[in-house]
Image 1 (cartoon, rainbow, N blue to C red):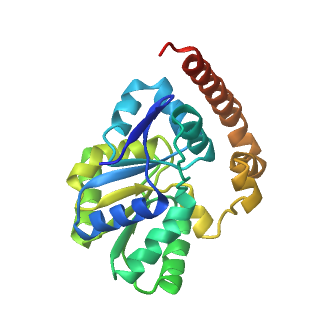
Image 2: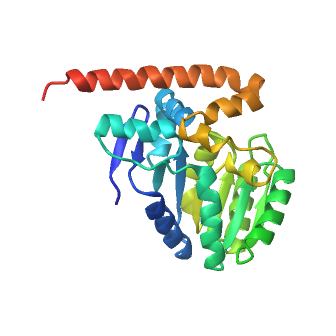
Length: 252
């Protein structure tokens, strides 16, 4: 339906923020199964290093460029102006659209604390939305019976949209495995949950525009994020430069 571009480790769809919002809203009203990934540098490198994970991402209904580096890579590699579609911007947008449509949403993932605060915020700021349910699954791997019970609960809720927060790559793997059994689009919005709930702050706008959100996150959680960003960011830059050089010297 939409054009796709290969960027290092995954295929990214090319469409505007409004097009993605309209498309996903239509799927939700139709209770159409599927899943949507908001790809950043971390997800790109995970896909590059793990072919099985890349194959799961290729099953997604949409893979949208969450990170500014992916938008820039699309422009540099394919001369295509691609709008950034950040999950943190998309979550309030889909909630606003769901409120206008009097739609039901289901929250899956994160912690009980975040889910409780998020539910309260949605009830206050998006009165047209019905939070049809929320599940904070245990950190350990779920049994088959638990997976089926969660899917049944989501379907029984009648949710039009399922917002998922399990962290990459866990949430993408869960969505790929569960999407065909759930009667609603699944949206992988992990990092947006604690920000919307007020548990964690988002970077200032100027840092977002300069592709420095990762630096703000690093300053918030230096011990946990340092090794990840040192590795993924460095490898992404190298692989992108390599792709640009190969493109520059490729024969017509």
